[in-house]
Structure formats: structure tokens, C-alpha cells
Length: 106
Length: 172
Image (cartoon, rainbow over all chains, first blue to last red; front, side, top):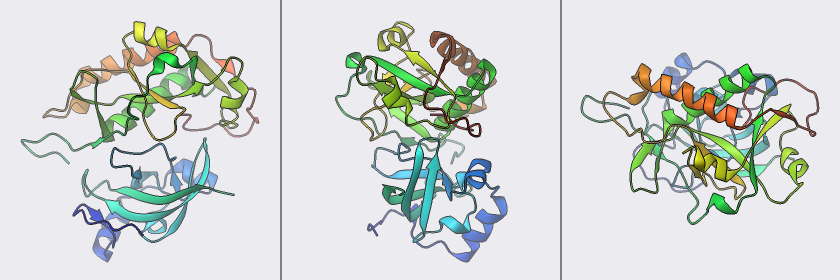
């Protein structure tokens, strides 16, 4: 896993943060219908080069915890990726899921 | 996050350096079926982007990115090659970069994919307190810009790669 040392990047999501996120989270309908963990694609990239998808685009918060291998999907296709961290830079109530090793799914 | 004195935090969009849309033959926008659905889809995508991203515009300013995705047509008649990416999408709109420029809709090379472009529907909205997304006038302007953009795309064309399956929620 990439070494991430920014304070707003949570490599370990503690129980309190996960509980708060899970209580707010509503499953993304497209992700649920299409059987993917995250609704998005590799074009969601900032100028730091990281692919990030809002947590609200997840089928469930628990399924996209750091360290998990996840399926990313949109009308563009399907990919597998590893969750590197949660990024709370934009606000703790609406974290981004930071992905790495994004590769087309077979 | 927005505090009393600081604007809401946004990420900076990755824009491929040196890429110019002038060389692109045409740009395709994957679209759902029906004008109302297209308008709703474009508006939703633009707002989703604006919630999270700003970009450094060529004039040296930083503005909120009310953008939607477009896909490059690499050669005449290559629509099928591009649209093969979108088997779940029934239609598409076709744009010429010059027409977008004439309509003062900037096109930027957003993201890593060299064939992926974005059009900024509402240029010139900077970060501010309160956040511009809380301003109904900004939403009115974005709705107008969305209608202008969709109209500029002309009649939606059928996607030959469409497999007839479920309706997508988010063409890009």
C-alpha cells in the first residue's frame, strides 16, 4: 500500500468513525443494482493523481474500508482496486474513498 | 468543509498539461434516452463535479468545475469504437470543439484517460463564502447553461453499441 502521510487521509478507520459513517450512509442505488462496491470510474482523479470516489457512492461503508479489495463500476466498465484510505479533507461527514491499483476487471 | 471565513474545501481537478481540444475531430457525450433525462443527467453530473472539484483555468484563476464528460472521436467514422465503451447507454450527443468554444464553453483535458475531456458549463464561478452552490441564482444559471449545452448537441443519436439492457443512471 502506498505510504500516505497526510493528516486528512485515514489509513485506519476506527470504530467510531465507521459507526458515524455507516449511520449516515445510504447505499448507492446504482452500485447495489449492478453488484459493485463503488459507483464510479478511474476518471475521478484529482491533481494529486489519486482516484477518489465519494463514500456516498458505495453500496456499503463497511465494504470499502482501507485495505479492502473492491469492485469499482459505472457505465464505462468494471475495475478492481484496493482501498488505500478514506480522505476526510472535504469534511468528515462526506469522506472520499481513495483507491489504488485500479485495474480493469476480468 | 466550510467554516465562517473559509470557502468549502474542494479538490483540484487533474488536467492533462498541454492537451488542446482544437485537434479533436469531435466530442461525444453518452446520453440516456429522451431530452428530459439528458438534461437531468447533465445537471446531476455537473453538480456532482462542482461539489468536489475546482480547476485552474487558463486565465490563471481558480473556479468551481461544473463539468461533464466528453469522449474524443479519434478519426472520422470511429463513433462505434468510442461508443463501444457505453453498451449500457442508448444515445449520444455530438459536439465540435469549435462550436463549444464559440458558445464560450471551455473544454479541458480532465483526468488521466487521453480520450477523456470535460466541458465547463458555468465558467467564472469562484470559491466564496457562502458557497456558490447555496445560491439559487447559480443553480438557475447552471440550468440555463445545461439547456444550452444539450441544445448545442443537436438531436440525440442512437448508440449502435447499446445492448438494450437496463437504463443507466449515470452516463459520462
